[in-house]
Length: 315
Length: 277
Image (cartoon, rainbow over all chains, first blue to last red; front, side, top):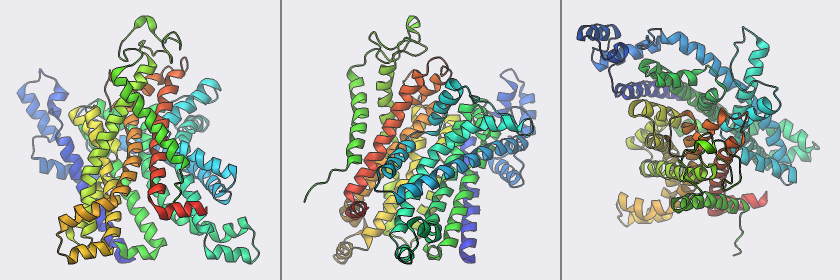
């Protein structure tokens, strides 16, 4: 297990470094010189030269990359060429909002998927079980931003019970914070809940066919009792893996949902950065999201190997 | 043998068929010009030759939906095509030489690309080259390569341990010949299933990108952008969000059902398990 962990860790570090090179190289292709963009067309060559030296864009690409990547490792994202403000604190602020959004969505997805999935599996021959299955298939086909628009229509336009968008920090008003986040959480959670319901159902169905469950029933436990004592823990192994992968999907889904609900998260920061041609900002946010996905995959792999020792030799 | 018709497969085929039909018909006929701005017909109610009404520029919703189907299919075909053309050979090579450095390299690169979701790639491409249908298609396609490579690799690994591969090797067949004559035909069905599922994901990605302004550019109709334009009018004219939303959901549902149905249909082992359930 330790050897596996070390190997996976090495892969993670190398992947992160290569991803850094890719993101940096990509952004280096961006037409236009940051100094020219900042000063406009009427700038004197001397002023441009001076600003380039300040930005450090007059140095070779390799040196710029080393600076940027080295800074990232210490949490320093550099200073924006456009707004002249440090990027790190902005990213940290926004990351908190996005993480809140993602975790809330995940909790709702679990609250939906576990009971419905187990029910659909136990009652897989009954009309209601089949109906849950079919409903989850429909839920998968609805993108989170569409769910968001539908929810706004129902709860903000029709019922006028919740705000259609906007974000109030928790420190300002916990009640408004919660009201503002309910619909975004639901948009992310309903869709991922539908996906997860299918996995829970099929995992529980697999477990229900196992001999140990039959043995438990033969010993006099009821169907739900046997499942509760012996089935759910076993069924949770594949579900936990899917859950991890869904975190990555939720993170990207949050970028779009933030746009629907005007929430100042990482996605909002990224899209504003692109619109304002804020190169370093875009680079930094993309890198944060990519590293988050890499980290999630790493944790999923390691967790899976810890739960199922047979997988350790597989790689 | 009695052919058992899978209800999901049929439903999926019908939904996909509808999208394809709408797109094909839009080449020769739409009720109105989908891009024609008509100030007098602003937010026109349904009826009177405008079956689903018109948007804030007076453009006919039904015509936009039909041409939007074309955009959706176009993006899906190109994106899935890119993913299949790049991912399949990589996966087959990795599967045929499971312990070689090439296989290891392919799978590691795969993991890396996996960390760049379509949305991020499209935003990066859009920032550099300007957002549009082309950058969206390339981003979605590249982001889908790992899915194809994984499926192709897993399927190839299964094929490689069969007796007919052993026989082909004993007969002195070269690697490329084995790949084309024996591996590809046998993993084809898995790839078709993957293509259908990937198509659904591509539709979702295109809609999300157009919604964010990183996909199809105006005036070309796109379901995602129709949704984005409708959002500000949600309080006054909610039907503008209803139709493109419904179109996206039904198209994705169609391709998902088609993929699931094909998987059940093409894999006899799965079919038996489903029947038992």
